[in-house]
Length: 129
Image (cartoon, rainbow, N blue to C red; front, top):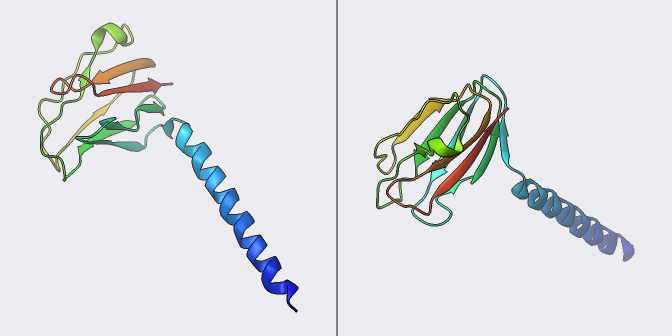
């Protein structure tokens, strides 16, 4: 009977380690969203700013950028037109205050580099497939 608690403890540790490995692997991959769905990106005052920094979506997915309520400053979601698909239309969200959001549906396939005009070090790559 003394072995049963030890076996249970070993099983719990193994399950916890397996779950941690899955969570770690998922954290390394870009976030994805299906066509016709929506995907929310958060904007934070602290690095890296855009979360996730890399996003992969199907063409036609509605993207929503939401500024965290705890932010103390505004942010923008601005397309770097020199690093975007040729047929993509330029966009700039304007200032997004804390707790506010901006949305856009990207339909042209390719890689988009987005940045915050207020905070030059904030970048996000969106891959539309």
